[in-house]
Amino acid sequence: MLTYPNIDPVAISLGPLQVHWYGLMYLLAFLCAWGLATYRAKQRDNWNAEMVSDLVFYGALGVVLGGRIGYVLFYEFSKFLADPIWLFKVWTGGMSFHGGFIGVMVAMLFWCYKYKKTWFETLDFIAPCVPTGLMFGRIGNFIGGELFGRVSNGNYSWLMGFPTAQYADNEYLKNHPEQINLLQQVGQQMMLPRHPSQIYQALCEGLLLFIVLWWFSSKPRPRMAVSAIFLMGYGCARFFMEFVREPDADQGYILFGWMTKGQILSFPMILIGLWMIWYAYRKKVFDWGPQKNT
Image (cartoon, rainbow, N blue to C red; front, side, top):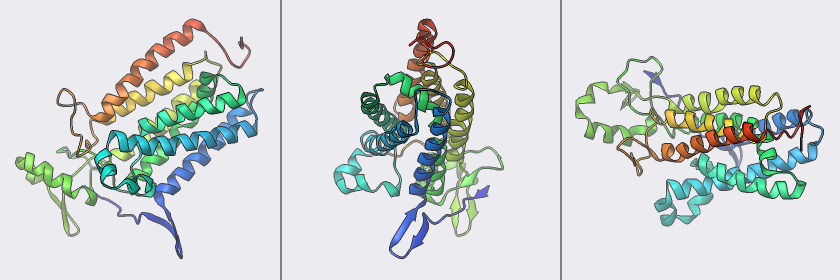
């Protein structure tokens, strides 16, 4: 079992100024999105640098506000009621992809109104720039020791003991006392081997989805098609990654005794994505390239 690299949550400390890793990951995510979007804009006649800068800015607001509010509403509403100021402590971690996704959708409506673009033309443009941000976000989760994976009795060399999973380890052993032989000593603590699910998600929802979307969108596709691939790709990746990710302590398994909140929120994305890809190729509306018909 690997030892979790207990990383200081503060990446940079200059006197009273502290930059947390979680915030740094968000900065890298937005910079990467801006760079990729700038490159994509050069491939299209009706996009420019100002539009890209505004698009990333609107998207950043949607991600941060929607992600945080979504996390509070979907996962930690009781904690918010006990301490409303906690909503603003973004550096402590706690962001919901599904909330951030809704936030971005709303932000894009305002951007589209400003620049007179259609909603799906805009979403198709920016979708391939999103997975790298998801990748950095999951790396931030790993550094913060949050959203760790489930206990595994498989003898995999990459399993890891998380110091932040002490409470979850104790609860697991209460429910599965026969698994006490899985305990391993790491430093001064006894830990259970867990999947580093944050890394799995960084690779699947981030790197792999980015490669697929970047390749798919490199050629003109019907309007909605790129957005559909994003919805299906993320929905499938998240749905299956939930099988190795520890369910939230206050949520557990919500449906059928095995479905988590993340799976319930992701399943509609897959269905909507399937409908969108069918509709896109049926209508065949092209916003750029030699087949442009808008």
